[in-house]
Amino acid sequence: MVRWSAILGCVLGGFACADSGGTGVQGAGDVVEAVGEEDAPSAPGFDVDPEDAPPTQTRSADPLPMRAGAASQIGVQGTEPSFELLLGGPWLTGPTDLAFDPIHSGRLWLVNRHDDSIVMIADLGLPTQTQQKFIDVYHYYAEEVAAVAISRFGTFATCQDSASVLNGTREVGQYVGPTLWPADPAILAAEMDVNRGGAHVDSLSGSPLCTGISWAGDHRFYVTDGEDGDLDLVDFGRPHGPGFGDPAGAIKYRVLQGVLAPVQGVAGHMALDGDSGWLYIADTGNARVHRVDTTTGVKGKQIFQNNDPGTQYFDLAGVDHEPFVETGLHEPAGLAVAAGYVFVADHATGWIHAFDMHGDLVNSLDTGRGPGALAGIAMSPAGELLFVDTQADEVIRVVP
Image (tube, rainbow, N blue to C red; front, side):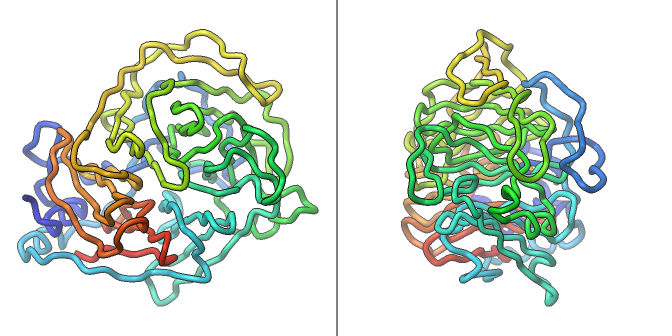
């Protein structure tokens, strides 16, 4: 059993890590949701029009910078980790997910299910730490928000574990889908106003009861459709800017049909390994981790079940996918990939498990949070594992 101190030390850099062959050293830059373009956009990021690419083409890895130096000392000492509170209520109200900003160092984004809000922390963990909270004024674009993923183009996307409720009261059918937001707190603060149309820069429909999302390059994101058990790939195209807009030009692809079993009210997150092209999914209802080879698949027939005028919806044929971990998990929820390991938070037990790239368990950590607490997990650029507690309304850092 590999010590947690060794695993986290491996992520920090300069330590022997697992790779696809089970031995040797894997680059410490294999970070969740770090696949994308080489250069960060100039502000405002959502105005960038990325070069188009085939929907299943995996981009070369563009990892977040990882701190090096103390890893070997951490591994040698072999101490088990402790836990540090970074933020709690009233900023956090049923937090479900968190993601580090790949452009701005020390910036962490979180989403809250209970009040349909987004939280940005700056200078995370430093004496200068500050935080801002942005509530979806429509209670639709972040209604029952379940997951968040950051792009490298000044945007982030959320998906909603909702069949669709407008303003918290009125059912409007199985219409809800992912929302694209500007990753700029100044724009969010200025535009999160019902009289200005809201701060979202794009939104699409038709992926209701979504529990997981992952960036796929450009303004593309993988999302789950909890109603049908599908995995979709949505391409927002060129965002329209804050407020209402025309979704025309966006494309949606059905990657998997009826394979997944999301559980409403429980995170079912996913992470793309930019080096291998494997997308790892916490398949909560099936008590497993499933993975999809995003380098496979060709555009198939057009699907006409589409709620967004001017958008297209296609099937992807010939996509390779397989179970990755089928035993030992109860309700896999949060998921992160870093340095040759897949980290999985179990919502039913309060444990976090680390698996190598063969799907073999290398260690388990009892967070002491108990059943029903764990949701999103993330690896920081400094190689520190963070998780959110949806019951205690806290974000916690695992300290080696």
